[in-house]
Length: 208
Ligand SMILES: NC(=O)C1=CN([C@@H]2O[C@H](COP(=O)(O)OP(=O)(O)OC[C@H]3O[C@@H](n4cnc5c(N)ncnc54)[C@H](O)[C@@H]3O)[C@@H](O)[C@H]2O)C=CC1
Ligand SMILES: CC/C=C\CC(=O)/C=C/C=C\C=C\C=C\[C@@H](O)[C@@H](O)C/C=C\CCC(=O)O
Image (cartoon, protein in one colour):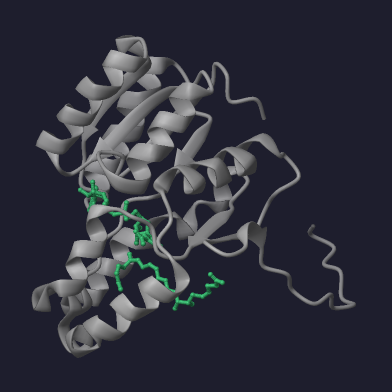
């Protein structure tokens, strides 16, 4: 699918990886709805992007993705505003080991989107340089894993920390290659963008 002229919705688009996704999609000619629960960061991001791209190509919608009503309302607004919706990027995420139920609810929201006739792929990055990494130093985020914070920092040094732009490059690859469906794209500092390979099994479903 060509990105040019398409409409994308990016959750958690106000900062970090989501912001890089929004920027890359705009760079490829898409119109983008940037959803985030953080209104201040969302508005700041939109203002910064408007300096680089035509303002009417980006809309910020405040939305907490865990609130089904807000989320449905946001999807509706995007379609009303841009007239269509072609690409959904389920990026919003938190690191909160003390409230893992809400972490799952936020981070894995897309799991039930397969019935909408869309291609569904996932991106699994190693460490990426975004504000979420500051949570490693906070007991309120790390909970029982707080004592591993120095170990995690050593891992970050060992494996490397990537720039969000490479994750955005992975997203554009997924959108542009229509053959990709059900794929797990891994992005690491040492191997770059690559795919998880699963061994072939002989059974073929009649439903495929
Ligand atoms: N930074 C990293 O090293 C890695 C991050 N990830 C995942 O990538 C995604 C993006 O992470 P980062 O950009 O690093 O984090 P970040 O903390 O910099 O940005 C996350 C954005 O999501 C928003 N958000 C959080 N909860 C929300 C909610 N309930 N509703 C709407 N918006 C919400 C935040 O306000 C923020 O703007 C997350 O799902 C994270 O788990 C995955 C692997 C590595
Ligand atoms: C620690 C929690 C902080 C934030 C949570 C979050 O949202 C992001 C976590 C991000 C990445 C974690 C990566 C962990 C990687 C390691 O456990 C290894 O599995 C890395 C493996 C391979 C790297 C291979 C390579 O670079 O050569």
